[in-house]
Figure 1: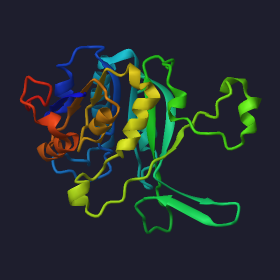
Figure 2 (figure 1 turned 45 degrees about the horizontal axis):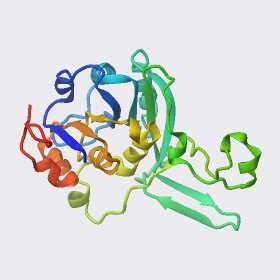
Figure 3 (figure 1 turned 180 degrees about the horizontal axis):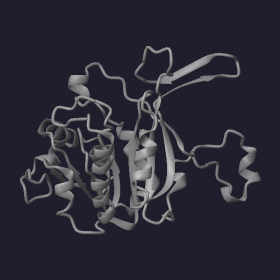
Length: 279
């Protein structure tokens, strides 16, 4: 059973109170500075100031992360601002090694051999003479050394050509290969954003699930999300039976939704295996 420590607090201030080298896994998605309307956060900082802020909270993550820990950072861009994810990676390069770059595919269309076009997933359409619809985001896998072992086959898929099972010695006779760095994870269809997804920028629970599984479920004792939002990473921690989950969220309404999502455990009084008090 997962123990939750959820804080209604600025993450930079909150993380300074945690002991160094105490976190096995971080899965998070910060505000992208693209003008998204949050209820308690201004997403319109100047570029230099925003990147400096990112360096500040990322430095705390670097202090907290264990030597063999993983930090999965989900960031997106806009068609008019495509360099943002790469600028952020460059800003963090003296804190972490970029070990893997994962492409989260939200929507895809594939032409089958019979000529039929199959489309799956969800995207936000744009009306533009210059830009394509943006159907993907990045998940950057940072580590301290670049040499952290991962469970490649935890997300494995069967070989399409079964002759590869015998052809490659590393298969050991198993019909399972590494999925690779393209992850097709669509959003669940909802009827009401206000009731079912009351947050302007979330990643699916399954995305966080896969990050946990890729790092190795058995190696995650303590997981952190400094930008908790409505708690999809916390739900994933619960799904994977992570021992302890720590989250920070400055918006009390988002935090309340996160507590609702993880259920009765989040209702225990402070001092028990539940949610810490604000501040």
